[in-house]
Image (cartoon, rainbow, N blue to C red; front, top):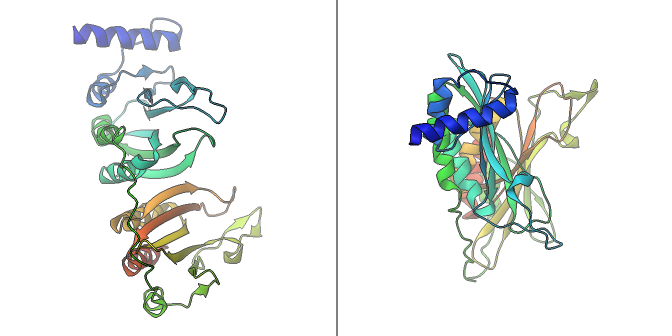
Length: 296
């Protein structure tokens, strides 16, 4: 019965795309659907796409209107035409508390995290989207993606820390870690900068210089809850990005956005925003370790 159901789904989905009786779905794609647990669509260009609608949560906008999953509230993985090696790309639709788990699951399977952003601004609850890519066999790509789905629907709950008094930020210890002096604001925020002087980027043959935003920064602020918060941005090339994500996650820093700040740069750069709470020196050591890998 399962085999009959799978054959019917594949035939129905692919006929709608091809407009005529399609060729048989490659066995590798059928096996990928079995691994992931969802049927897919075999496209006329030879690619294969599996969609997983986010129907486990009810979303509304600021006007109180329901937002159906068919409006784009879905996770997907798509494979290039079958061959010895294929490219898998996709997007994961996540609640706030699921982001860390999804990032960790993708990186454990050696997927490249490409971007992290929002598609809406007033939805409740908030929904975020994470794009990914990897090349390999269809079987290994499907197996590596499967654990991501286990994260969805099991987002961590936010727990408010008790007020135990504001810790002191040891600027001397921080400066030893970063190897530079900070900018200190009247609010008590302590900020360290790390301009990308190792790369030269031009946009339309005009320099995009470090002072214009080609760099990284980390700002620390102590809280009455007894923790210290860090927020910042890290300028990465493709070869830097995954290492930076991994180093931040090792110390519990949350990745909050990955996107471009300029288009058409002579060197492709992505800016990765982050936030975290905890022991200030542990957070700083993780950030510095990530920064040490930039350009390496």
